[in-house]
Image (cartoon, rainbow, N blue to C red; front, side):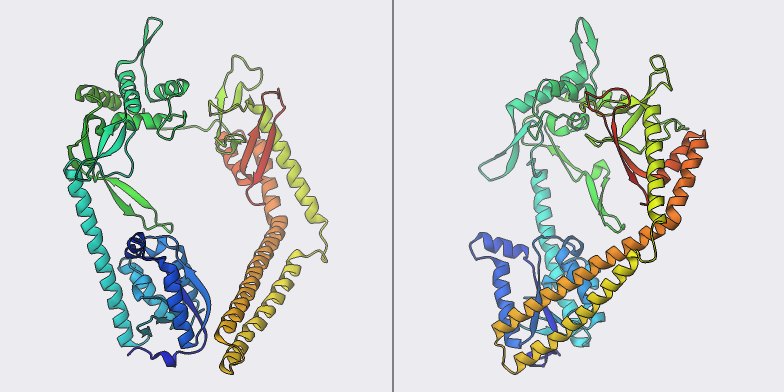
Length: 530
């Protein structure tokens, strides 16, 4: 059986607030702000039950899975640590409406920590067999209702797409959204953008004639030409990307087709749980004639498709020999693009290689690679010697880790004292020295002080870890990096030199202004382990 309200144990309780889709719809009809209403209900319940509320988790984002909702993830983490005696929610379905994995995570977190779930109608004890079954059944029914609604919406979208309506979130370049008398959404050509789409297909299929010569146009040349002409993109900028041009050339919406369900969205099992988009077989697509007018003829589109197929990227060479010992390390300090090594042996008196920014629109000047490499080596050498000297000057009294250890212990003692004050608050409430409002106010103040102390402990522990890492660096890392630098200077194998330098440096930022010449440039080094 559920616990009676008057038998709830003393301790810290929290509130979890989250909107449902039904709440959002109700708000649109003027029924008031849902979270504020739920907060009033649960605070009144806490007052009736005489339990101590010290924190409110308020979810401001929506997501199908609990991994997409940061506040419930924090709540479950605190529940697993046994921080709360109970959690107040307006209904158990607010905790999890995801799949069985999500529901299992919620159920296990509350069961293992013996944390109560308190609602206005019922209090659930996860270690009570009947309450556990009732709780899990409530989550199951909530998930079933959610999936039913989702399937109904998805069927409606598929039916609309099958009828030739456009159901995407925004129209493709060259079109604008329009609605018929039934409220169905379809595409209507945007005159200005439609002309640009026609021009892109014409250039790609037929090329451009200049000075009596026919110039073949690919995606890069078309994007540069559009940019030079100042034609705005979808986002109203003039920075055209060749990938956008290729997407336009492949999109069958321009010949009057509506295509849907071309990809399946699958969440990976990696820790970040990102979505992968996997192409479906064409027979599984929705591919129908749309209600919109075509911008491009079938004949022109097929010619473009044939050319795209012919111009697939050339296969990479079977063996790739590294010739740049700084490959993947040097980045432009202006645009953050990776710098590349290019050879001009006929015009250089030294190695014949220059290091250049690969962004044609960036004004960062290049330099002779030998000069840049020498500057990096000299800077690394000087910095390592400096770090080594600093470590040698350290004395036993200058022990940073010991200072931070003492600070962490002091803060932990302070936290113990603050935790002890919570029982005093309960005593004052029971003896009616504090009324409910005063109790909540003092409870909130004490919670803030505890959280502040916990944050200081967290920061101090991070500083302690940093101090210990620096001591380790002085003892082990710097000699190892000095050895790698020495081997770099002696080696003639460019690939090995690249690996050695990457063991020392994480990144080099290079900047050279137009006014700078020769060896005038600035570099900023980021060491890998310092």
